[in-house]
Image (cartoon, rainbow, N blue to C red; front, side, top):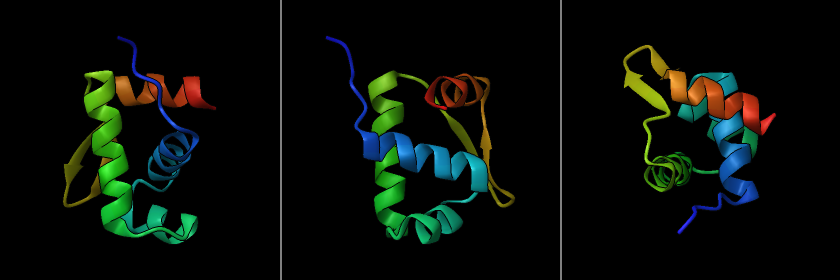
Length: 73
């Protein structure tokens, strides 16, 4: 079965990618931090890849995250 991301999943992913922060993405998208985190986890599980490395400096895209971002935009 193939995974189909929702438009919300994609827009939140793009916001996190561009902001490099779940908090900033949540603010810009008028969403909650936990909601954004859940969408990113859902995407990662559905796609079977890690899209971001999470560290104290924020969200750093992996090579898979870079590729997915280019496909989204």
